[in-house]
Amino acid sequence: MMRRWILAGLALLTSAGAAQAEGGTLVIVGGGLDPANGDIYGALLDARPQIASTIAIIPAASGEAAASARSATRALELHGANPADIVVVRLALVDDPSSTDIDEACWTGNAHDPAEIAVVERAGAIWFLGGDQARIIATLKAKDGGDTPMLAAIRRRLAEGAVVGGTSAGAAIMSEGMISQGDSMGALLGGEFGEPLELTRGLGFLPGALVDQHFGERARLGRLAVALTDPAQPQRIGLGIDEDTALIVSLGNGRATVAGSGYVTLLDARAARRTRGRRIGIEGLALVQDSAAHYRLPVGVEAEELLQLDSGLAHGTVGAVALDRQGRLAAATSTGGLFGKRAGRVGDTPLTGIGNWADGDIAVSCTGIGEAFIYAGGARDIVARVAYGGASLDDACEAMLATVARLHGDGGVIAIDCSGAVTLKFNSPGMKRAVAGANYQPFVAII
Image 1 (cartoon, rainbow, N blue to C red):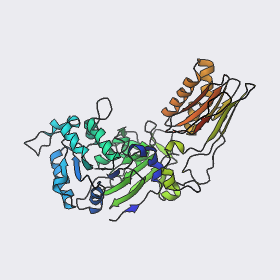
Image 2 (cartoon, one colour; image 1 turned 90 degrees about the horizontal axis):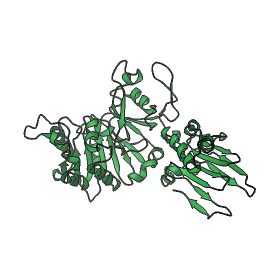
Image 3 (cartoon, rainbow, N blue to C red; image 1 turned 90 degrees about the vertical axis):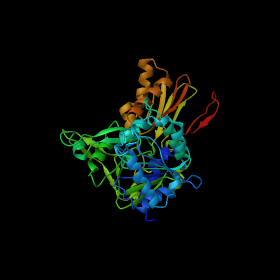
Image 4 (cartoon, rainbow, N blue to C red; image 1 turned 30 degrees about the horizontal axis):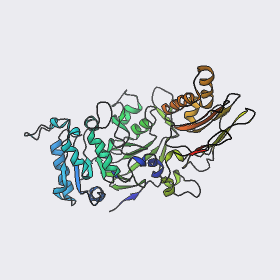
């Protein structure tokens, strides 16, 4: 099978979500899949666990669920799938006019049906067909925004090592954020011309990135760039997948390959910002051509070693707060940046009042995404909440970190007040921390 390795640094993007899908594989197809494409169909079939050969086809996105499922079945059989292994999950939102004996609109609530859920629970491959991605969300998400029993079963199978794939609309749902409509003209011109951009929530099988499909064929570079810089959309890495092309991601080791006839475009918007004006302009957007050079690991650290770390442990900041016998407080912070930082980026001197602060009442040291902490007010915001708002040190730290989270940042804070009360708060998956002193029980923790 011909495959192209494209993302040597994908581990840096997916490690944040590796815990939610330890062993599974994603086959994300940009639509327009040629039924004769053996590379992509082969990747889907080969990724099934040996003890689970069932292929569950989910036609929920299609306006012709029965006809689409028949076409997908023929293509899978063409590439060696046993017809006895192929099962169509009866999940759809609209009736297929080509099937006069069945009303597929009656399948709308089947994400709660034990018989249909059982199909998913024994599947080694789960294949989402194309159509309208909003229909998939409508059928698999509960009214309160939570998972239906069928979606929970799909997540379990992915974590247990099954392969989950999708084409077109079935690709759009893969990321946590989802582009539900829009074209590049409408996105860049704010709806003056073309179809305006709309963003909503996907199913989040692929962590750390935003997926767009039909990418080259429908000139969607502009719409993905706008989506990546939308303040309401937290993902800043974009994956634009061409038609008849698949991004194949092994969630267990964070590696990805490309199969098919087209390309996958990788956009890095972590340093991008929108410029002011009537129409949208974007500065600092990177089109990644050499991922091995773009996502650099620290000296002496291999990608495989990075995968063993939780994303919350990849921060390089060292900080300390102290209270001495005379009741004097001190804080110190030395930033080291993040694993995978660009070459030559050693770290920053923390801003006093943001990264750290100490006065006669409180000492604070912060770690995390610096820009978010600056906008949130950082250490000085915590001190002000205590001094002027009467908040406890715990509550003040949590409130500041809540603001950081709203700004799409994460990190943590350690603080001590003049009475000796210690707070260790974080909203990242982990933070290395410890407490020691004459009046304290020694404490060390990571997660």
